[in-house]
Length: 468
Image 1 (spheres, rainbow, N blue to C red):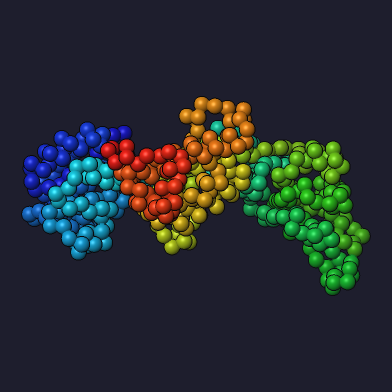
Image 2: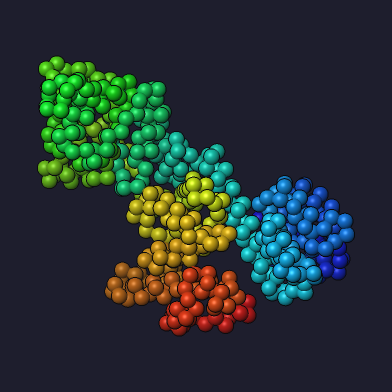
């Protein structure tokens, strides 16, 4: 969709000049208004990606127009221009909500560069809002985010499984959302009004885990001064979620098998069995068939747990969900960090889409939190996560390499990827700063001399960027 911008100026020659030059240079449509009143009326009835307004005009001046825009369309970027430029007036319009300030007379290339930045910011804000709305309306399923074919399939299985009372085994790598999936099964089931109790198996010592699960009778051991109900009884009428089931000891495995088979428990120190009405859902990131071969997990228990199997895809197999997840995490954590949600630049999003993300959704959430914490501009940029990308140069798109990296030695492949990363990353910085090395260095958090050394090492010339 071609962006539409509004230029406001009481000088008709200026309006004609800017319209003729900016439409082809920016690839946009330009509307014009000769006064603040006309401009505000147009803004109320039409969607604009950007407003470029003169400061001094008869009637409603630029500053008043800016303040009125802030009341009705706060996210609409406004750039102010004036022949009466001063530090005081610049501060005033920025404090009033303008995203930039350009004094007249201005250099046309500089104006185009700054308008492009503002249009990119506008595009990112619109995309962020779109994704945020899509997340709340369409792309969530009991707090699980995803619209990829892989996740649509998962949601279908959850709906089908939830209608039964069968035992479910959820598998997947760490950080893929196993607990959220198990909660979704419970929330869709007939047991949703009952309790959902989680047991994190690896964190509970074996001696304690048995009493936690099955309860105990008074006198069963020294500290047992009274009867205590176990989690199986506490979860009656609901669901018991056994997280990381692959880590439980052989002794607990045997007792758990009996509970599943007989649907009853025997508390420690007790002589009578107690019936239990519980659905069991288990999860693991462990390869249980391999554990069975090694004698670490009971095969009969595996078959009892794996009545219905649900394997969650890793994030690398559903990368199209990453933008929605990023938006979710920005809105989830920005407020707690004391800042407004920040849009993510196109360059950063592309690099996040290429990261290995072995920690899956949990790792992506951590990266977004770091980006929010260290972002210094109006949007999250690659340099806000420069340490991550220096460790993972493969995150930079490498289609242009045209080679099979695994056919190279480790040293050769690493050098090639680093070359591609620096060409892409430093080139993007120089493009944004019009070849100004000092400004590029400030943006990426390096000293000017350090950035110059990188440019020299990888033969990156800033001159072509100064002519763009």
